[in-house]
Length: 81
Image (cartoon, rainbow, N blue to C red; front, side, top):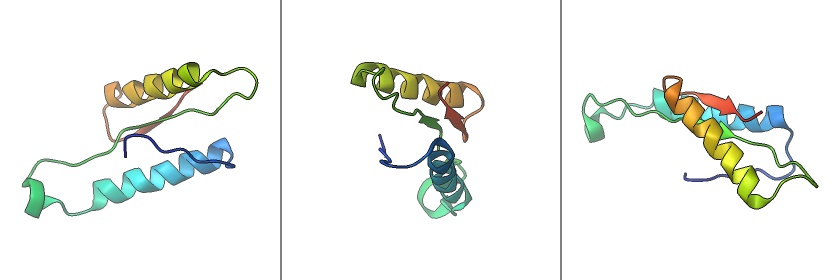
């Protein structure tokens, strides 16, 4: 995925959903496709702030959380504050 939008879910539900995806991907046996190269997922999660957010601000927070996940060691989920 490049982006995933979960409508009508609470923050903890969103984190749980993307964490399941992250875990499934990292636990699959990818060796027949990529050899010994690890395949992982880094995820940045942001919650829409109704009445406060522009689309640009929302996406920027999600992007910042994604880079936080990558810089934190990859293969992790980070929630934007």
